[in-house]
Length: 334
View 1 (cartoon, helix red, strand yellow):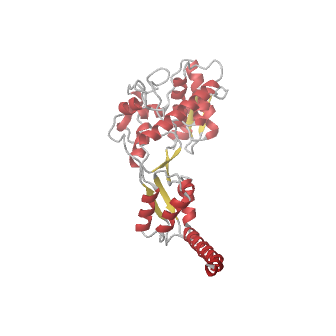
View 2 (spheres, rainbow, N blue to C red; view 1 turned 120 degrees about the vertical axis):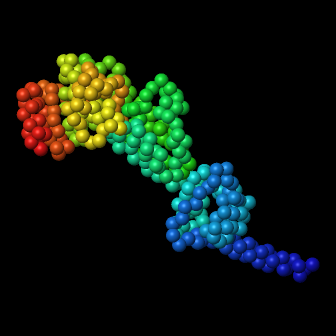
């Protein structure tokens, strides 16, 4: 018994040393880099638990010490990541601990989808249909079905969605991006309408949206948007037709081949502002924030006409004679 009593402290010391070495080795396995030679995408499936993720990473050879992570779940369950489905980018040199942090922070891989200002809703739908790794839920739906699903069954879609760059993760539905875009346009249109000038010849936010779409399609020069808006507003105030070519093009639909003839300018469509009075019945494109603001805060001035110079900007005229001279200079001679 005395011998055992003398050996007991030594045995305890040895046990502590063994446990300490084992603990350090376990921790070193968690800190060891993943066995990767190149960046790799790993997708956490919906509903997957920690043990399933570890088994899959182990089976793919990304982890070489799956036992260390299974032991972690027993000894330090509070250190386990809060998993969210999605793709994660694993990089060479990343340690197991860094992997756990990546999963816990939900740093899923996202993809950009850019909808340029001035696109039509049809172009936006085509971009959604072509977007990789997006759930194409609405691909076979009509415009009316989309609007009904978004809770806007009585509205037409043109102009109702904000052009921007949206980021999405694998599996997100195109309907979700449309919803985000619609809400964003609602917010910005409401902000613009609240800041509108007094005595505008438009009565509703929707009319401001229509006007903004015409401004967006007429110029890509930021410094011209308010001047274009001013021309349109003055023409509306005087009962003059807007006579803007983008409305003719929109009204032609698939018949537009890149050219507008005099016959096209005379062709009656609901959108041809050479034929109809006032604004067209709906927007003709997706206007951006600057165009929305220009529609409600147009520049003051006397110009009633403008013509494209051919370099992306316009020549503005106060009289028809000046305008015709500008047309001769910039259009007919060209």
